[in-house]
Image (cartoon, rainbow, N blue to C red; front, side, top):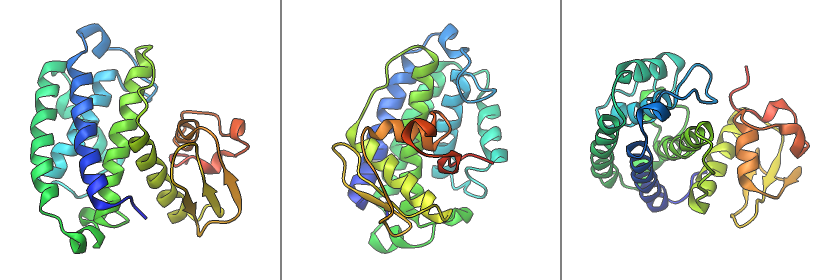
Amino acid sequence: MTLPRDQVQAGLIDELDDFEKLVRSLDADQWATPSRCAGWTVGDVAGHVIGSMADVVNGRLEGLGTPEVTEREVQERRGRTPEQLANECAEVRELGATLLSAFDDAAWEAPAPGGYPGTLGDGVEALWFDTYLHADDMRSALGQATQRNPRSDAASISHIATELTRRGWQPATLAFDGLPEFTVSGGGGMRLTGDAFRFILAATGRGNPAALGLDDSVNLYAD
């Protein structure tokens, strides 16, 4: 179950605005820094995020999020400067805002196009989550502090709960500090509390799940 439509629409656009500012702030050396995303530089991470939004606003939806499409997005933008990608981010953000404004509740709750396994709302929330998480990948590579945003934390936990449920993960209630509660597989079972971002990192292969009393099955990206 995604967050309310108006929150997700506004949240994604705000996150893209922050992402543009991050990209625009970087120099050539920072751009070439290896990231914790295997095989990708900071610039490659930015290329994926901006490429995903470019694909969405241009209707290139088939296979979005698959390794093949993700690699295409990165390859298409290799060699571009931070300023060039920041400018593209600004363009796709504006196009995205226009596109999102056209969706009513019926469209939001309908199946997502392009083969994404969920509703349109799930897909848009996933884009918000992806932008927020990858911004942290870039900052982590550069030795910068995580820039926490409670709204983005909530969207990320909501997305992770949806994905874990889809994968048949054990029933759980995600009750992290300062956020609404989210259920996995109907709720009940274990109750996870504490810092939301530690869980986000563990659930995406960027943190140690054992530190939270969990195993690798919580990792959305585990083989």
